[in-house]
Amino acid sequence: MASTFIILATLYLPALVSALSFTMLFRIKQRRDAVVTVQPFGLFGISVPVSSIVVSRILVCISAVGFLGLYAFLDFSVLFPKHLQMEVFFDEPGISRTLKEYFLPVDLKNLGILRDYASHRQTYFDGLDVEARKVLGQERFFSLSDGSVHSTGETSFIVQKIDGWQRYHIQESKGELLHTLEAPHHSNLTFYTLFEKLPTADDYVIPSFTDLVIRRRVILRPKFKQLLAEDRTSKSVTFKLAVIGATSVTPFPWPSFSPTVYCAELPTGGLVPIAYSVYR
Image 1 (cartoon, rainbow, N blue to C red):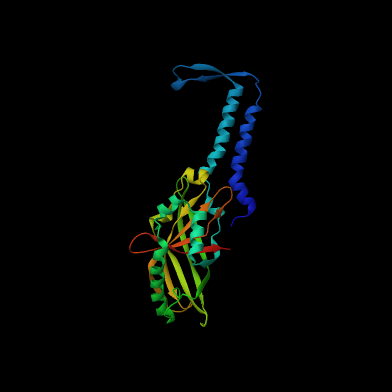
Image 2 (image 1 turned 30 degrees about the horizontal axis):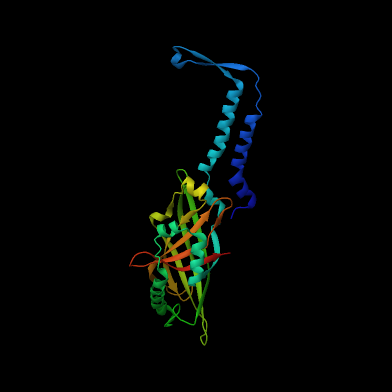
């Protein structure tokens, strides 16, 4: 992540200079009158007396608006980290709390998250267990009723500004998670999930003025494919269901981002939240 000084200068220096420019409007003194002559194509001329204070104030206003206009071309992506360490949790209360705290009802609707998603979560975990069985030989992992799964890992998230006003492209997002199952009367079991972004139209992010300045939040939703492996060197198995990672990004008043809520894209339609990450 960029240094504190760079973040402050990038976010607030144009606004500060613009504000100082506007204060100059009240410090400009009347000195003398000037005459401006407009002579289009050299055929005739129109002379208009213009007060120098008017000209000065126009120039100051242009300068102030110009500095504010810099925000249209500001690259917000440089303010956020490219690589992150994270922990991932699968408890439904934590998912519900994260959705309520960081996402509005309209966000959940736009994402396509099912209202009764809790009743569909087991479908995802049953399917994941089927694929994990090929790697571990363990009958149940995520669906073990008296077990607790804890996951740690890392991810990259590289966003690039492209041509136009505030247009971005999610260029890369991939990483790995180490899943650990702890259960009574069972030795700890572990396996890896490797994930990599799939190209979709949602990789292109075009926030509006309202998103950036008024709502101060932009929702990112890249899609990932998952590979299951016993360790980093073993042969992996591709899991059939894709996962959407929904993150709420806030540029003002300070760059920040929410925990990512991972949602399974079920064949029946709609997204089912199945996990959430906490970054560190």
